[in-house]
Length: 145
Image (cartoon, rainbow, N blue to C red; front, side, top):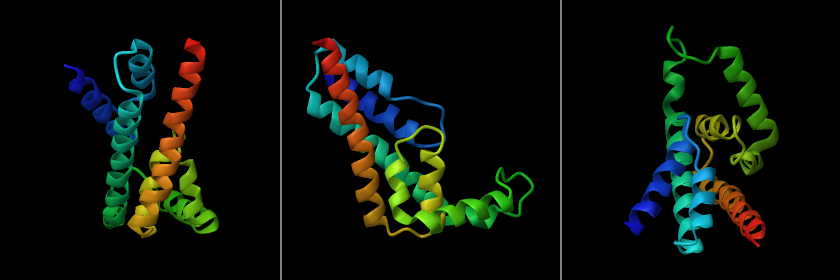
């Protein structure tokens, strides 16, 4: 049953990194507070799931432009052009913001559109998302005393 908690956290973190309306932070905090799980295992599960979800966004971004002319496509050409311009301006360092709500998921998608090299993408996104979960753990443990 304990392995199920790590897997559940992985799945929640994966989904939260995509455009699905999921959240993994509350689950991580709950598991930390329960004091039944190894902290580093929780951090690895959350970070790995979240980074792989972002990698899915990156992969989808590599092919999303072929649908841009379709009536059902949710992003206007002007909005896509603005996203490209922002990414060109700030470059791969903008991926340090990939942990942020609302802008992080689209940012990882536009990185795929912009053909960001996968290795660099994974390195920067892993640092950003791992740091977010680590900080959340530190704050939670500090709150617990």
